[in-house]
Amino acid sequence: MKLLHSGKVRDVYEDRGDIVLVASDRVSVYDVILPTPIPDKGKILTRLSLWWFERLADIVPNHVISATDVPAEFEGRAVRCRRLEMARVECVARGYLTGGGLKEYLASGTVSGVPLPPGLVDGSRLPEPIFTPSTKAPLGEHDEPISYENVVALEGAEAAAEFRRITLEIYRRGSELAAGRGVIIADTKIELGRAADGTLTLGDEVLTSDSSRFWPADRWEPGRPQFSFDKQYVRDWATGTGWDRREPAPEVPEEVVEVTRARYVEAYERITGETW
Image (cartoon, rainbow, N blue to C red):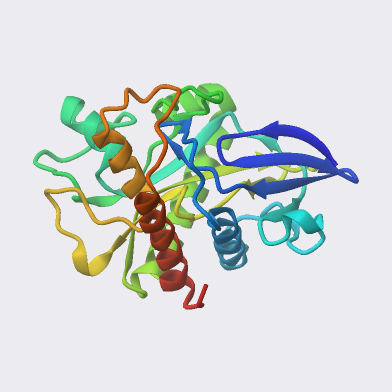
């Protein structure tokens, strides 16, 4: 196999004309890779993505060829995929206000140019899910929110409309299923690309703890930071160290690693109903 690209979390290889996408145990916070891995994280994300790909296939085709026809050393954390020409934007759907969206709202009353009602707080449920795209930053740089009009300028009006439709439909489908299992999906990011025949195709990962914010529904309380089943715990720890969000990132203590891994596992088990 030939290594094509090593990203924040995933490594991309070429093998027999296909792409082999390998999910590492690396964790990225504020677009910077932390020096301490989270054990089993890549396998959890891979299995959860595959679970979701099956349940979203009627909305949009996905890039999966095989989860078993992969090199033995990557078993459980790799997927053989179709080659895609990836879109130049990140597609994000938000159903709740938090994180960077909250900061933008407090400053301007909008998120990615979408106006929102006054009086919303951290964790508020939005009147309806919104499409809030962002740039695709190179490794070590930060993604930045952009407007729908920016997506039109980059990808064309027809593609932008499809990006928005698919992103919101995936979010709605995922949110409905997760809600029945006691999990709120506050927001999620997906990656779209075009297959060789031009078909818009879902790639990378989908509705995982790295690409989404998962909250337990019975602990949701707007007006404060929420308990999260995703990497928010390690993100909060990193913020609390006084780190300036630039490389080098601090080493993660063992107890933070253990709690973070447990939250990844719990998200997987709650959503899928399977035991890790």
